[in-house]
Image (cartoon, rainbow, N blue to C red; front, side):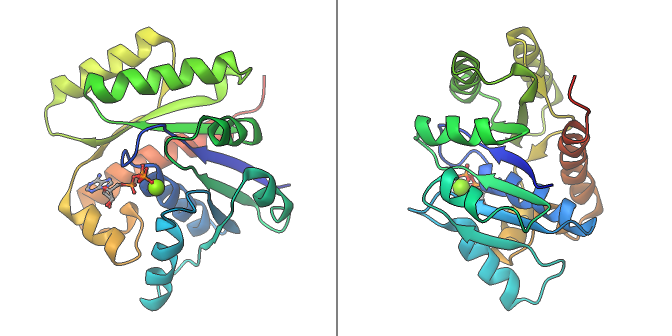
Length: 213
Ligand SMILES: Nc1ncnc2c1ncn2[C@@H]1O[C@H](COP(=O)(O)OP(=O)(O)OP(=O)(O)O)[C@@H](O)[C@H]1O
Ligand SMILES: [Mg+2]
């Protein structure tokens, strides 16, 4: 059976593609047959990332294919164990389609209110569109190194009633460079950064393997 996970946000540049590649890589490393459905066809960044990954001969292999719609992606899904939807920015219709098709949708967000508020608003909109609140999880991405700022963001999200993935992905040059080389953020050489990326991915994996209640 094919599983589905989605990375969505109305905002650009928050870390959807970074998280999609991270989660895809962690599953692929566990021998799952994984494909990233790159739904951001106007930019196609994950599709290009896959070419860099191939050029550099990186393993495990992760399939990436651009699709114009979730419907198109679903047509080709059955040969994979997992499809990771890398969502487009600024598309509510496409975003709801991803959430409907996915067992879990991850909403990456930064720490500022300018990032948090639209993310919570999107989560509310999903619920209004009959998406089960249980399958929505936020992820802190591109964070700074101030623990109290992270703590405040955690409290804000908790108060809004949403699940937040454990850990956080800091804003680091090493992650950017890894991505430029076709790597996922868990494939950096710095052990501490590798562990931070793995912690967030592992929590998404844990939520995916929860039994439906
Ligand atoms: N933790 C991080 N540290 C450093 N750079 C990062 C980090 N996360 C993302 N970036 C960089 O920020 C840019 C945007 O990230 P990413 O492509 O993951 O966001 P996105 O939400 O998919 O953006 P878009 O909406 O444009 O598709 C990329 O250049 C990426 O390499
Ligand atoms: Mg993207």
